[in-house]
Length: 187
Image (cartoon, rainbow, N blue to C red):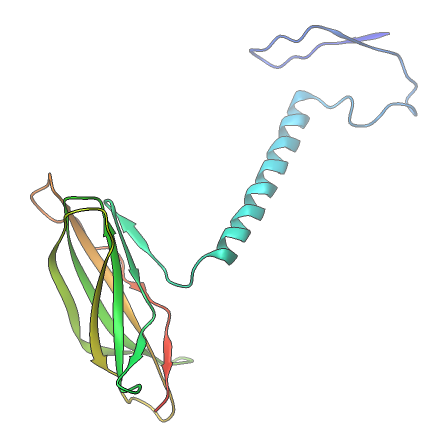
């Protein structure tokens, strides 16, 4: 009989007696070193994390949200108004209680290929929106759908914001612009 000791630092495992076997009888996994077992465990954990991340990405909603300083802002896809001549642009804002936020929204007309998207002026601005409680607010405005090309127009809007917590005298930095999904408006 052989005696096997577990040499993992900081732990004590009493010796285990393993009956002697010939090389052809030994299972290959029974004699892994602690380092090999740790590497295998890390590989299994990494694979599980990647599998779960893939599931999360597939199940995520199409609207993208940005969170900063206790506020989450989500630009929603434009919806048709006035028989498709106008677009209702909405932004959902949810903040910690007693927070003030400023939100900018910029409407765009999406172009394909190498053409840059067409910015529609002006920027809609909601200044000093006070969030008394943690309930979500929907900020919205209506803009005419542009006619920039022959065929349908693909409209979306970009949103950025800055937050002023109740205990702070100034607003924080602006977030990056976050795009909503686009909506196709037939012309």
